[in-house]
Length: 189
Image (cartoon, rainbow, N blue to C red; front, top):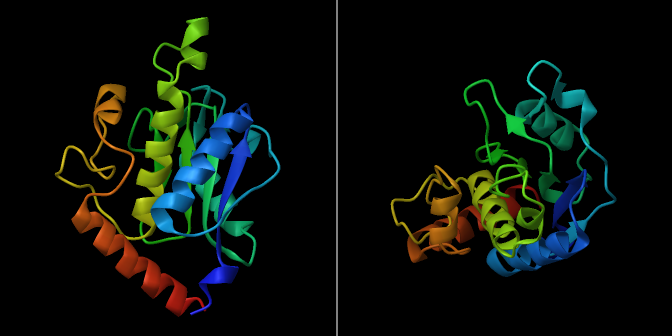
């Protein structure tokens, strides 16, 4: 298995601070045991903007990320500050291709109150982004939502739920993720 040549790519799309990206990259490496490459910032994904809603279609972003993924990308995670929606939900914190390659997350709703200037600087945003990144990447490895309220794969209905859970997998999800990771690397070797 040639896992040394497979990476998880983190693709910034818009206004996401380097400290957030670096912190996320570290957490992702820690949880998945794979090296992370942070790419150049691609700017807000204007191709996915729904002008009427002033929101970005997460499905279109996923498609673009996957279509343009580097050959050595095992997984690819887009990180944006644009407000995401999909055809089913009015807004989403993130979305992933289940057992697929791509995921996208947004800091927009994770900030709490976007109008307060201090909200963008509050420490919880880093931890919320890390959890959301690991959660959505977990889906790409075939993990479903977990009933354990502490597990990062617990479904977050709001930021309060995100704040309550840990940024790592419960033992059962970790075991499943490692199994899927082994399968993924073996199939794509």
